[in-house]
Image (tube, rainbow over all chains, first blue to last red; front, side, top):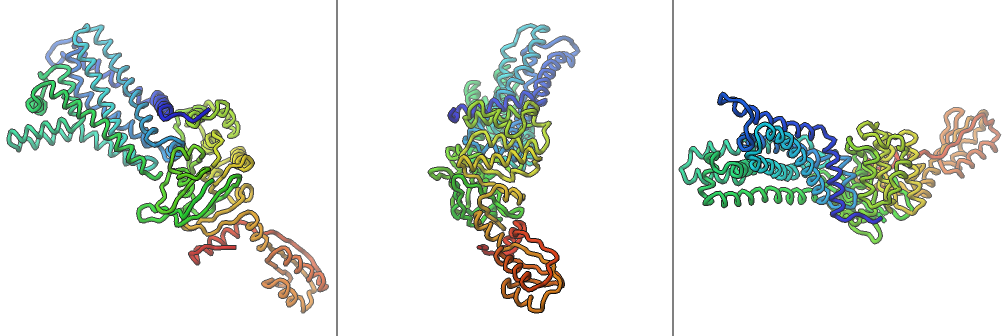
Length: 282
Length: 307
């Protein structure tokens, strides 16, 4: 039997990562949280307006966007860092094998991406079934686009986790986890709040540019705006999103710019992580 | 097979290893000895491609190639000092994963688990293993590939008798099958049992590099003969000093340190003198004392100690 090809080695590492994720209670908790969130939002959507009954898919999707943008990056960052930066003895044994460090990293990310995406699909799928049985199929497309946004968020934040974790392989794992939490807080809360705060101090044009930059540069905001655009058009947009539409000339230009941002946030951190990992002494 | 050529390693401003020249050939088992922090693990990791040299080169295989190349590592099996595995996987899944990663034949999984005496625990999650069992699982992974180069970082620490037997069998098999084996240890019994050559590192520098014959010769030179005598004639101390310079007389006890021939001559002189011999013990030089001597001398002089 000969040594496996790079692709076969990547596939082996990915499958092991999937097996580990399947046995991790955190993956099950992650899927359960999504199911409960989706069902909870759908079931309580009319409560504030004094009504009762389940919201349809479209309204549920809009309500869920903010929660998805908070929860998915957190799960991807934490599980990504833990996978990419294993214990020293595990890392030393794995990286002494006759496969490149980049192959190991890509395999880990691919496996974790599949596992987390599957957890999201199971969680949202179970909730979707409950919504379908109670409110019908109207707006199911929007719900599907929301799930797609969650999957994209997973890919982006796993890539960022790779960059954070690559510097901590075999050491400083706790520090890497702490850094991951800082990244999560910055991406989901701090950047938006800071951009809005600074924008109030600027003139209109400069403020618009700053708000647009905050959306394009921050992957969480990019996917949130992209999801809202896909789910409900521009109706649910805030100041930054409207500024983005003005600057790009409409929804198509905005969507392209957001896609480019998301793609860059997947490719560049992984490339930087591979570069970093190759230069680390274990 | 394994060659360190003026290998040096710095971590920031901290120098871990300085200009180490060492070669391990086919069928040779070499022990790396040295105090904690002397650079043993750094040397092993450099040969496993985990650490990049700051100076010099570390090459492995035939023909020799940089240890950093994944292709070169195809011929290497490395056991880290504190090997660890994902706790959710079973022992068999771990071994099977590495078997497939190394492209080893299917039957190797069972053979490797058998060598590590883990057949009975192979289907339990690694999280339920003791420290010694995890170490044995590491040995099973190392045994999988039949790699021509074995690098073992303190392979016998925390092992029970079954684990020790597995580690010794791995090294013995490596020698008999013509592999190059480099292992670090603090267990001098492992050195006596396994090593064809001993390399001693102190503060990152190689201070001793002795093959089995040199080691035996240096140990023999440090043999100790103790005699208990009565009614020793007055001329005996002078005769002993002539035959065995440095022989010590403390009342009825005579202590002679030196090679076997010197000790035999001293014994003969005592007998010939007419003194009454009341007791006798003789032992070869002890490896731990030789090791202490090498480490101590290196610490005092900061230079290499040679036979």
